Amino acid sequence: MSKTIYVTSPSLPSLDDFIQYLRKIWDNKWLTNNGEFHKQFEAELAEYLGVKYVSLFTNGMIALQVGLQALRITGEVITTPFTFVATTHAIHWNGCKPVFCDIEPETYTMDPDKVESLITPKTTALMPVHVYGNPCDNEKLQKIADTYGLKLFYDAAHVFGVRKDGVSVCNWGDLSMLSFHATKVFNTFEGGALVSNDETMKKRIDFLKNFGFANEITVVAPGSNGKMDEFRAAYGLLQLKIVDGEIAKRQKVAQHYREALKDVPGISMLYDIPGVKHNYAYFPIRINAKRYGMTRDELYDKLKANNIMSRRYFYPLCSDFPTYRGLPSATADNLPVATQVAQEILCLPMFASLTKEEQAAIVETIR
Ligand SMILES: *Cc1c(COP(=O)(O)O)cnc(C)c1O
Image (cartoon, rainbow, N blue to C red; front, side, top):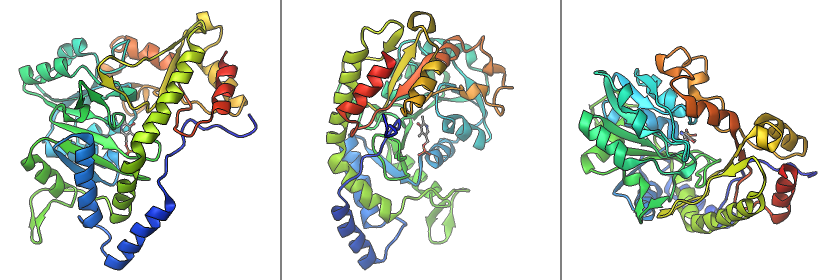
């Protein structure tokens, strides 16, 4: 390929439509702090996702930090090392200790059967991640949370629009965090949200994302500034109109990869899970070096030499970063599945506008 193919490329709404919304913002001169577009986007997003309450944020990271504050999480939080660093960082920024739990070999999500052995008297919460849009085993995780009196806070950055048995995955647990970063299925340039199930929690979150202000003169908690502005709320409204079409295009890309790579020895892929409506956020493949005849890193380099940018999500594991590798739970002995998957995983280019020719070039290079 002479033109570089990136691992992702954002979907954008009509610029003309956006300019009309910008005119409104210029007329209103209301730029942030729960303006008209903000209110409308929160309502339409809750409706689209099929959830009760949405609180918009300036990005997913601050939403994670505020969510942990809203739930008053302290002590130790059991989480997964197979995620984007933000999950672990948020725990650290809240003065808590991340405790890494291994993942399931099929979905790469936190293995519920390995959670209980990590619980101590200091454990207050579970923070699993729906990796690549694969829903976690919520039934088992919620049962553990209930048994031990723990909060369940989902990093739902990858599951925009994902449903299981018709129900939004974002309804699970005490809270879910969404990210609308440029690289996600649904973007607002930067952005994020917390999904909550009761009005009191929604209120608390909204105080916390605005410095803790409950009204003009009352500050109820040491809050942060996580507000989304009118510019991105207006843009988000337009994104809602196109997101279904974009996911449908991604599904076609996924189907084509699956068809074209199914008989390549040593390459395995994830498939749709019965009962789950997927969003095709990523297209991870796993490389068995012996059978494929090349390691994951060698394939990564070969693709790069052909101007195809894949990504080794999630390598290194969060438990292998200098800041966290000293933690007692960060050992490969404790994390055998995650350690192996991190060595073998590669995310191929996946976005709605990926052309047939580009995909053919990617498949050809792999084969
Ligand atoms: C993108 C992402 C985040 C962080 O979201 P930002 O909006 O970029 O701050 C957190 N967790 C996971 C799993 C992510 O993929």
